[in-house]
Image: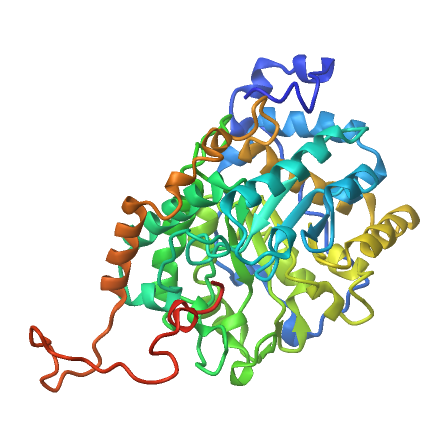
Length: 477
């Protein structure tokens, strides 16, 4: 693995790595997850028991010895301010590239309603220009320069960008019962994201919707956990490809994020950001079904849910975030919170939440609260309210993903060679995959002699959605 001369200079510590230390991923001893904060009370009904959860494991290709040694050396040179900065993610609507000269943030995102210059119809070039501006600002910053990771909600194709290929939503794709189709869709999505400069999508959604009153039910593949489980690994491999030890992701691949951990599809009465009042057995057998296959396939990030389990928000539940996810499930990537979800934890606000970090959140998604949250998190690290071991664990996990993405390579990720090749957006080949997905997702509930439609027949399509491309495309478009 060649690390960037642009961002980093190889040091004696890295050059002196022994052959034994670099031989294989198995030779490295990983630090144990930092025990969840003892000051975070979790009632018995929301306290997970790791001994009854299934086993899975992130492939060793993400934690090979050379990567871990590289990160250790890099962290030895990072200031406290730089470490805290890695844990904060800001939305493009609330930050400028110039802000990075002062704030050493680790990530930016484009939320579903955020776009370059506030233009919802911004061309692909504007998206790439935005990514380049932030990237160059991060590289020009003094101190230990660490590249940004840029995330976006590409959840049924690269749906924020005009002209990209749009696919049926997950609920339709679940009806297709075709994991190979899902993998092809993810490959197309990853490529189209890569050409516009982003590194990371907030998907796949592996929720198991159990109540159709949930307004986001269409984001899940189906109410049956076996459908979700059969798709989770396929979509992960489509987005990221097979992880290889000592090598970054291949060209046209991006990081994924399995979400929303956990049971967002199981809330009482389908309330969004609500409470899943269920047993731990149901939590495991139904709502966690998609996570072991995704982790085994190498998913690089997991997004914690807004929702709760038996009265305790997942974003603040250490038994879910740490004891289970980093215990039997063996997840070695990083956990990002949802949009200001940390502000819903008791005793927290959007601008301050040590409890969520101590529970196991590695990166705060703080779209418009990032500046104040950076300062409060820095003070909490200085005071010891956030322990240095927990901070170092979070930073290591974030840097681990950045290494695997190839962000430290001399020319950046392999996908950078594809940037600006906008002929891939909505290409004939990609739209052919989308048409196939539409065909396979259609479900005929009843046929009283309507089909096949007579050639030359006049068909009336009525209702408010009859000629509304927005409603036809669905949410996140």
